Length: 449
Ligand SMILES: C[S@@+](CC[C@H](N)C(=O)[O-])C[C@H]1O[C@@H](n2cnc3c(N)ncnc32)[C@H](O)[C@@H]1O
Image (cartoon, rainbow, N blue to C red; front, top):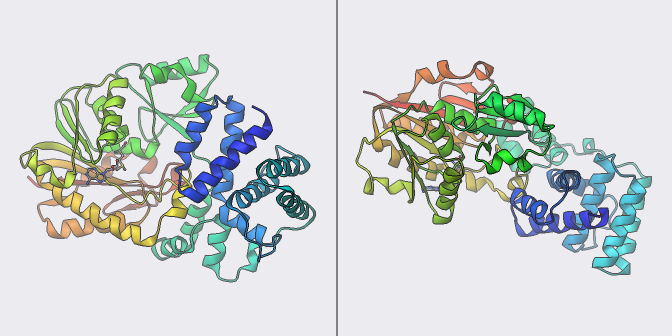
């Protein structure tokens, strides 16, 4: 693909994600597949789109120095300027003059001479001048918010919960690329055999310390490897793999996965159960449930019975005390996955967190009677907000004296996370800066015998 078309694609994606609320990871994956981009072009497109989105507010702070404040820019012009600024300031792959030239050509194609000359003027000014310094912003929370492009309310909330240093580390960590981690289906191939095969095929990988099935790919585009089509590999963050590990399933158990789509953890549980026993996997929408069935089929797992349901009403389908294990991987704000889905930080609002925490309360309340005595329930989310994590558990335990935090959970954690900064009496909060995973919360409850 020519560099011009690649940048035009980046601009289209950024405008759609930035203005119309599209999901960055979905639209980017689709563009890479549809346009059959080479690995090199795919990674440059990803770099430009994610890099620009991740730093939107910082780029805007820079741009305001160079654009007349009274001028109302069309959305695509604004994103073209952000994207060009990002490449000039943060990428050294392409010289500034080439970036400016292509931005001007793009504006001629999209707009008219006036826009092209504005874009040319702004970017040439940027090239000649010093960029403004965020140190000019006197309020420290507003400064960190602009420097790392997080909404101010989010930074203020995290500072309240975790203090300044941890918040700063988390905001900075969120700007980094997420490592590519995959899970091996051990009933098809051992992790060692997969590593040998990948090395033979020119890939590089290291083993995960959080899951015996996990690998982190350090070289090569693993999504194109044949082992995906053969149902041996699944893309999954290590923190999510830890959830599958920590539920403590065994062969022949009866397991409930109350919020299962798209099926990453359901299929992991089935693998750990050696495809023996039964897993009931529910989700709210049939389309999403179909994704779970499809994934189970791809991986050759047939103990998963999927169904569309609101898991707040499962007592209509199952008797009380039916399940040996329950996974409640609850819907959440997703503030732990900002590295892979940067659009979330611009769309989420503080009130969403409170609304979600009451759904989480309701889900936990409704699935808990389905757990057998002595059974275990793992509550997990991919967020770093206490209101959706620890506070949900605290409220639940207060009203349910027949449940407690399972003390064995802490013993069974892998060595790597035994001293994690996010360990509390309620469970484990992983932060993205700690182990290069998503921000993720796990708490294992046990129903007293
Ligand atoms: C964090 S995602 C689950 C991810 C999944 N466990 C995995 O590992 O692939 C949360 C899921 O909960 C589902 N959900 C939300 N509210 C629900 C409800 N009331 N009943 C059942 N599922 C619900 C959402 O549709 C979403 O797919």
